[in-house]
Image 1 (cartoon, one colour):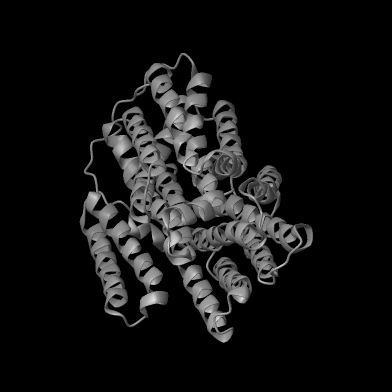
Image 2: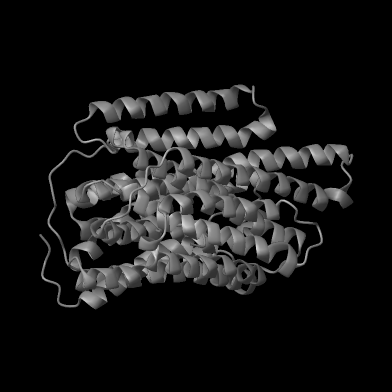
Length: 492
């Protein structure tokens, strides 16, 4: 049960502000990466990637647990706890003095996001009854999320260039303080929905497994693939993943009901939602570094240069959402990834001396169009045929898959890029004048690798998915799932 809501519009504004903060954080950090690398002494891309992956892995690994905790202890309580933790982690992140501290506090930010995001959306769905009122509220929710991505790109550049990069974290503190005060006044409290055990073991083992996997991938380029540390990390990842699977099969209330993957559309859609962010996270990571370190763009100019990605996402997603009942979802999910792959292959030819309008912008627009088509359609296809109760688990899986896929994809692309750069440096006999060309050579290989993730997503759509014409109920449910599964995508 939930209290009677006197100011539903104000409650929506407060919850949407928290969502804005989470999405803002996903883009604002990308623009500041070169400044963070220089200020804290990161040893290169293989270590710098943890600024992104630490947040994404913890966010994704604990997201489903966050939803369960909201049901167990009350949605407003978990929402407030998540906002408070996010604010404290942001403050500490702004004061980071070395890479270790930054990575630790980014992990805490991810945990805060995992607590607040599912609770916030759940509150919105509870406050607004199904129908026109809920659809309107979810429209506002999605607009705020998209706006957060665009504002993050510009604000990240402005703060980094004209104030200090540390303010990309400090900016969250006053926002969170306002949300905490206002939420206590205007967001209704809710009693626990159901008493249940919390699968903490599941969240810890899956997150630990993925972190160990990414750590091994990050260390492999410098230590070697047969080094004891590298092999040990992979072994720990395998053991923890096995423990996760055994745990999920044995506990009464698992984090993920593994049997749901027997449904082709759920397994196929989840896999697509894993593969596509794997390509996208790497694009944002490397384009931000390329624009600033190779082309000499300022942080503000870099943020502005990435805005067409967000705008294209908004336009294409908006058009497709209005006409989704008139198109063949499977065709969209086969062609969309190929479009994204084309954009990534366009990036694979970036030169050392580039013109933004001809060498960068076309790739951004092409890839964004493909990504938008995939994300909007995937939510509909994946929830097709599942019950309303199961759709909550599916939306959680989609969001979890995005974060985990993005983190693992970035790690893989970093391995490829670093190896290509090192090989080119050796070929150039360590000539400092040729270092920019060697870095670009690595970026090019990274973009090719990213395109393979997108090609794989298209292949999954072609061979795994079974599509039928969506019903009115499925179209309505897609709006809710889409609102959650756009929670924290860089630029989306």
